[in-house]
Image (cartoon, rainbow, N blue to C red; front, side, top):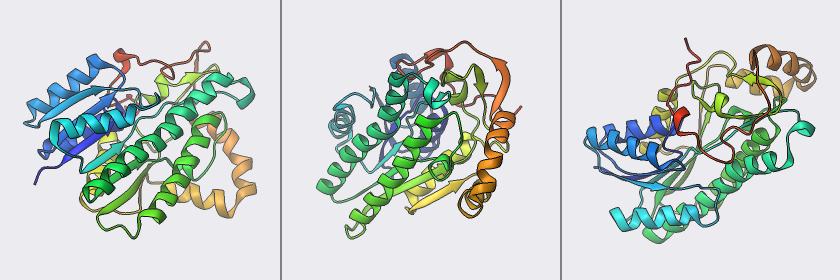
Length: 289
């Protein structure tokens, strides 16, 4: 039976891959992202796959935006069964070198907007008798890495928020809060990130595909669980961070500079932290070649 699925962050990376997975199953889709032109392209892909879809241009970091997405979903399809939230931005730079307004916007988009999405989704689910909220965390919500302070702080916040929501909803039949936790994924988020480090970032090996994360999201929609980790070395990194903190902190800086940054130098810029770049909105980032 087809469901109504909201995907926030639908035009790039994991979100766009998830849209394709849901569309292939015949689900009704509400697509939300910042770039209207790319959003129309994604909607056309859904229609070509035989799915019903509506595009709602949205910046989830704006006050009231997630609630407006929920209203659009109800107006178009009568309700929401699943909400997959994948929207996120990233910034590279030492904490003191990252402009305050950039750091705050990363937190606003990655954490506060996630809370706003959760508030809109759970309010609707409680009123309608149930539903599944799927939040996108990160292995960086369980460990830390230098030069990504805003993103790391936000993902730790998402992890904590999700646990609280799971505790508060555990006695509500039919209401589920899930987290998908990817490691390194082949998406354009690294090229699109703000950069005040002067070295282009990249996903450390091993790099998985956004399609694999998307399949995990769809599986959570089918079979809700507390958390699903996607990444072959996620457990190893979490073990080192927790059990051997001194060793971890000794190694993480050199490893980040060797494996998490390229040799390509870039001038400081704000990437897509404040505004979208439709030309760079793709599923893949080209990191697995």
